[in-house]
Length: 70
Image (cartoon, rainbow, N blue to C red; front, side):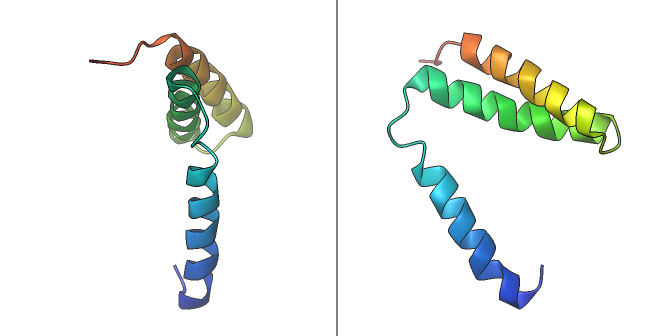
């Protein structure tokens, strides 16, 4: 990553992470599952947009259904 882009990505990451502050545990699990599923779908399908969206949808559903571990 080039030097001039680092502050932009850092600011974007900070905004995305602070947006989860008011979410319930179930909503956070769904968002995390969607993010992980989207990445996995993209990797497994070679970057296909359909694979990315499908993985995010499946990951979000699974994340929503997972109870928080105690």
